[in-house]
Amino acid sequence: MVKTEALQAIESLVKTLLLAKKRGKTVHGAVSGPWGAGKSYAIRVLTKKYPIFYLKVPRGQVSRTRLLRLIGFALGAGAGGTYDFTLDLIRGHIQQENISPLIAIDEAQRLFAMKALLDELKDLSEDPDLGFSYLFLGDHTLKNYLSAKEYHSLVKRILYKVELTGEIGEETIGELLREYNIAGDPKEIAKLVKKKKWKILELDNVLFLASLKGIKELNEGTVELALKGTEVRV
Image (cartoon, one colour):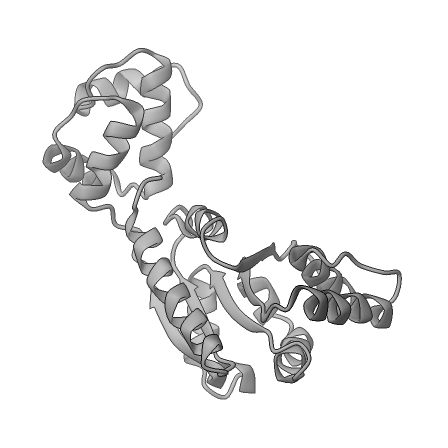
């Protein structure tokens, strides 16, 4: 597991939200950042370490019934054919498992574009039998929604916010090199990353291609070799 900047920042936020839940407070958090900054990777890793339930918002219109079904599946409660049936399944599951869910919602900007769904999330979080807390993860448009204080009352309950830049530090670069068993100077690679405006996902792709081609050391020359003959453009 590579301790990326995104992973460290999101883990700190998760700990804060879980502590708030332990103290009986229902508050929410949000993480915004560019594509490729490592948000999805980080939260998927953290779901294996902490009691977090993950769901990803699909593209297109989402009804309140479908949203609740997504939540039901994320919690492991399953879903029924109607809204009320699914809600009953969720209530029963929460009572049986004795859990107070922290739900990580990826691609959350898609939800924030539909105010009716924010009403739904707010109602679920205020239900004493459910007590959902949310960790919203999304792109730069999520940040825009969060900065508009009067956009929706749910925004006021998002007390903890993290904005990722997508920049990759030398420590992370060193960890990635070790993971792929490839040599290289993290300081020089950091300069190359900055020059090419790579996010962590792009650097990881380059290292993967380099490993496939048997490249033992990463530098500006071997990067071009790794990318040669591929469809990757970074």
